[in-house]
Length: 79
Image (cartoon, rainbow, N blue to C red; front, side, top):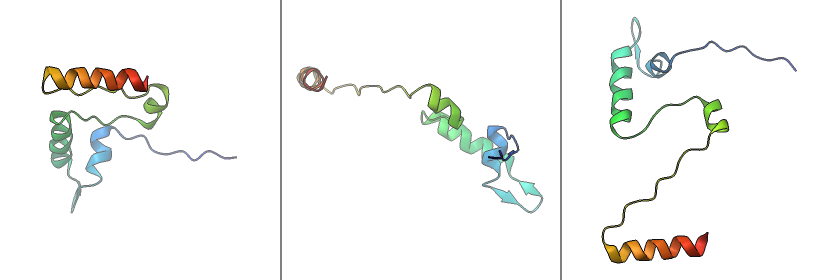
């Protein structure tokens, strides 16, 4: 089994490849896109990082105390 060597790109360059320009790739658009993802709470991670560490799940904050009690009861029944 032969391994195929792939070029290593940093995140910005990899994203910039989705924004072609006549003289290469648009890194400014890539930076804006990465910044937008960051502001929305997302991050671009290496595929290998997902295998070693599962993503954290955050429970949504309930709107009221009544819904908080219902959420806790639901979590207790599923656990």
